[in-house]
Image 1 (spheres, helix red, strand yellow):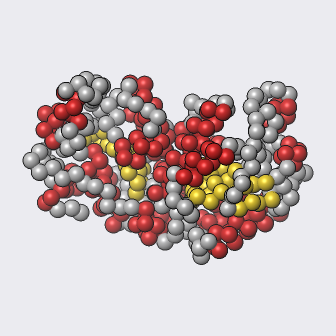
Image 2 (spheres, chains in turn orange, cyan):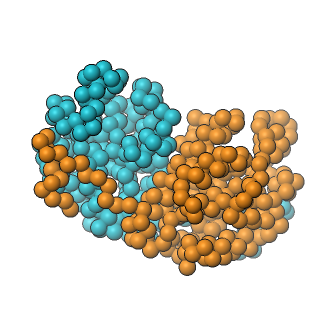
Image 3 (cartoon, helix red, strand yellow):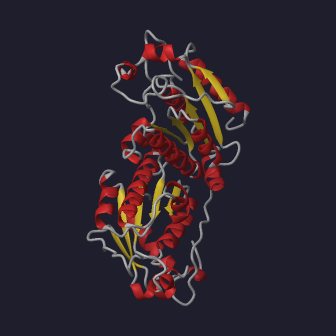
Length: 206
Length: 206
């Protein structure tokens, strides 16, 4: 696994540099790694789509992972609130973690409102062109508010949640996302199929 | 990939819950995921051992990833310094990221001084017993200071680096680490072999 030169000695210290890189992991996995960055209003369907897509990809032997509120807001970012500054730091950390997972050879999906263009841009610029695929889950505010699966819009309207995206805090629509998915009217299956078609077209997988 | 019930509709919203879990990823990978937490003084050989072990594991088709100063301090934790509070937050985030990688099915190795017992304990408690293997890279301060590959001890002695572990900031030795490796005198090969023996004995891999 190493040789004479890799002894830890005082006179002839050789520091073992990394020998395993992303491309080695991709080769072992027999698939590419990539970041799919889902963005959109609360209840637009980001997490739903990411998990439905993961279900499909896993069956294709693809190493997947979904970052979402459940595993980020209760863990890595549990010290953060929802002020503009905290939202910015939240997305910055998610971008950094996505990059680590990408380097680890994982097909990463992130499902966060990520309302601000500049924060999404920062996450995009952490990785090489082509590694970051922005998917705008587009649904009208009224539709999302009707769905309101967690009752958050209701609370926001009642003033119980300050700085709620779409109500009391802005959502900045992506200007040039790789994909726009109409999650306001289409079924999950149709949305997932659209994403799969795009990924195949881009030769992310075959 | 899903069925009638997973439509995104307003009347009958069904939120697609996660269907892919750590055990599914481990099954796909044909190996377990685990966290090896290397701790010890600067220049004790943590990163060296982690990368040498990774080299070996990758050749056994194990999905590995090493978190170390290179990919954490310049990225996720670039907003943090070296005060006690910042060291604590640094280790907290590394613990959380390790947990995410563990859930993603990755064989994770972390190579940070992580000088404080309570911070290592926090990282340990984030995951289930058996998922966290603490490896104390034990080398005398004098040996590490002689090695000083980056000239950090010299700078610390000159007062140019405040709060340097072992010089002006304490290192709290692990009380019950899973493994103690004598990185002060042994070769990298011998150290790596000891770790591999332990991992096989624990049936982490065969």
